[in-house]
Amino acid sequence: MELEVPHKGEYLLYELLHFDIYDIEPFEIAKISNEIHKEKMKWREYLAHYTSKPVQGNLFEHNQKQALVSLWKNVETWLKKAASLNVPELVHQVIAGGGFMAQALKSNEREFLIEQLNTFLNFVISSNSRKPFLTLSELIDNLGRMRRNDLPIALEKRIGSTEGVFLTTAHGSKGLEFKHVAVIGAESMSWESDRSTALPFKLGKLFEGSTGSTPSDNELEDNAEERRRLFYVAITRAKEDLLISYASKKTDAKSSELQPTKFLLEITGGNEVPEIEIPVNDLIEAEARLLNINTPPIVAVKESAWLQKQIEGFKFSPSTLYDILDCGLKFYFNRIARIPSPPSASMGYGNAMHATLKKLMDYAVGDDKADWPETAVVLDWFTESMYHERRSFTKLSFDTRMKQGFATLPQYYEQRLPEFKQYQVIKTEKWFESNLNGVTIGGFLDKIIFNGNDVTIVDYKTGKSSNMEKSLKPPTDKSIAEGKIPPKYWFQLGIYHIIISNQAGKNWKAAMCQIDALEKNDEGIFPLYKITYSQENIDLLKSYIQVGKTKLQNLDFLTGCGKPDCEWCAFAKDTGAVEVQIPEDIENEL
Image (tube, rainbow, N blue to C red; front, side, top):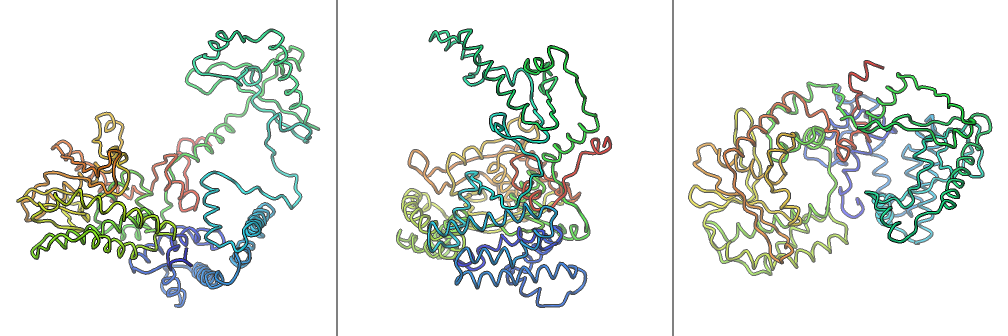
């Protein structure tokens, strides 16, 4: 990405700094990111500037500065060599010179890590052999597709080691032997029930009856014998020790009783199977480990004074307020740590469309009113805006989005022009803020249209119309009672409504809010979604503002939401930026 457009891939430096090879604490990285945002610098500019000076004060320890120096030198070296080395050579230099191999050699899992590095390097070499002159961007695109489709790179086992646990099925164990074997799940329902043609609601019985294909006694006996042989295969893999386990109850609401498979009873000659209970403390520890996976991660605060300084005079926007209510860590990473975000084609395209429409409105509406421009002029503005956003695109996505804009804008302009000509007074891309019970909240509004003191708030959106409709639905009594946040667009426009209606020294009234869709719907038109807010709606939104204020003041944003699909909680765990805490009651029992 950096080779295509300078600074395009800098967001990756934030994650790279979390690698063990640099030994920098996650909280210190958050401070670096915050400092770069305040100084309005690029990451590479900041690293070059900071690492060229002696350590001052106690912002970072000496070893952490050395890590930054190492990273900066590596990145600059790799960028220079990327133009002259082929991809396998470049990857080899990154592995060897970037500290990855050294880190692997120091690890307790050095054999496994070295095998991973060798496997990846061989994958790159193989990719280059299949496609000579492979480019770095092509390799990254290929890896991205593999990751999205859950296609792994098969690990090449080069270093001999038999230590570890080998997980396999009974079928897969045929021909293999192990010192110790544990057969788990030896319940009758697992080994004796035929699930090969299972259908819900016992529909399988209906099909059997309709086709006359009810299994005969001989077929049932043959099936049972096949399962008996498979069970025999599983238990005869052990050279020294064999452990067979089964559950006594199902872990469901009914706590249904379970029985061991009859094959196990056959082994014991019909005698009762001796039961060995797992100690309660071992079960509690296992439960605690499972809870660790889904428990909301919590930022380990070491410098609360620094955090307090970051929130001094903080001004909420609709999006930041929504973030702190939705997931504290999303707010923390985006608004406090200020981690760099990857440029995206959708965001770049959206920004270009917004900039084009701002030029259009400012050109034709105002004191020096001009004729509305020709479509060709609007497309020229769009082309210029896309050029300014070029760091957000690959060459292919840039060309695709240019075609999309050239196809969309003329039709949109034609459909909206009669309405545009009715405008008398408007303001575009302007910041408005207000203070509500000690909370300052504001935001940039795409467009507001005046009709006397009545104001219509307009927000442009470039996504699919169907998604907009879902996000504009007002909350229900049930969703509010369950503590769910209202749909995002409904929430965002409602906060804008409050901001405009509470402008100091103004007698403005937010009469209506609109989502102006910049993409056609299924009917082939550009929909204009209109929404109004009742006093009850406004009171609800004001209560959310106060909740956001409390969360900010109490630093409650240091805890994640814990949702399984939350990218921010996952990011925190993956980078080690936070600690995942065991619930207190479990911890006490341990």
